[in-house]
Amino acid sequence: MANKQLQQTKTSKALEILRTEYPFERILLGVLGLLVVLLGVYLVEGKMITITRTEWWIFNTEWKRTTFSIIVIILGTVSFLMAIWPFFAPSIAEMKKVSIPNRNAILNHIARVFGFIIVLSLFFTLLDWPLRKIFEWLAEIGA
Image (tube, rainbow, N blue to C red; front, top):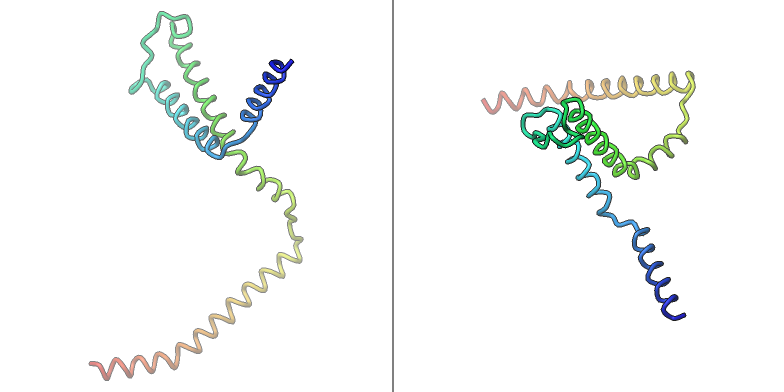
């Protein structure tokens, strides 16, 4: 009886460890996914990495080697996307909350922006006239 309970405790602890998500797992999965994609690209290219065991049934024709390379690229891409998905999932939920303004609100915002630009340009133009005279006078004194 005690042996059975000990085995269940070990099993549940093992499942608990497997279910626990560690922060470095996502980073490791992403890096490995990118490396697998790179490996697949090199296999498709066939210059840096080549498959030499062509007597095996999966590699005995060029079509099968290319298919294998494409599957490797797809697996790497899927693992990379699985690694970065948790970073983008909250953003997608937030984007669903965004509302697009109507035409009147957009025109109102455009008018405010252009009005602010005009006011600032007038302010700097009016500020430039007296400062230009001062700097010209200082340049004459220094020369």
